[in-house]
Structure formats: C-alpha cells, structure tokens
Length: 115
Image (tube, helix red, strand yellow):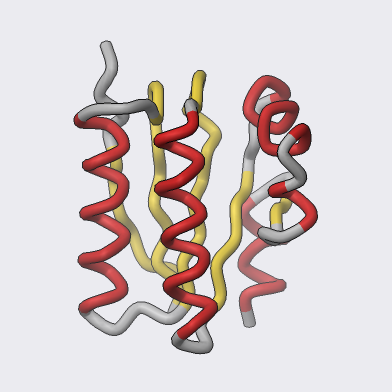
C-alpha cells in the first residue's frame, strides 16, 4: 500500500494532519501536498503534521514536508511535526531537517508551542 491516508482535524486555531502509511513518490505524497495546500489556501496559519502512523518517507515525501514548512514560514505561519517514529526521525535527522522544522514527541507539547 503506497497511499498514506491523510485526515484533517482542527484543535483551536491549529490544523492537524494525521498521516498513516508511507509518504513516498506517487499518490501518498500528492495527497499530503494537496491537503496542505488546501488548508493554507483556506487560511490555515498553524499546521501540525502528526506522523505517528508513518512507516516510511522518501525524498518526495521529505520535499513535500519542506514545501509546506516554507510556504507557512513565508506567510508568517507556524509549522511543526510530532510523533516521529525512530525510523522517520533518523532519516530527518540525517539530513538535518530536525534542526530547522520544530518537532515534538507528542501532540500536547506541539500544540503548546504553536500558540
């Protein structure tokens, strides 16, 4: 299964995207990209990606995450990641992305820092 289901919910003024499966080249990265673009186009200024269910991420998935981060940064918004698995954390850490994008062990801590 290459499709990573993306579900969206709102907590306060933060949009949380719950991701599952693989964020890789193809429909899964496209689904994430279009969901983020949609949220931003509708005025979202705080976006949290919950990666609890993500099992794999490739360069396309990483690029998609970076584009969402940059887009919100440019508009003065906030973007963060939470619930990174050890495997995903290792990949994002190797490319130093975790030094740039705020990331948190859980949703509660992430939401507190999004205020």
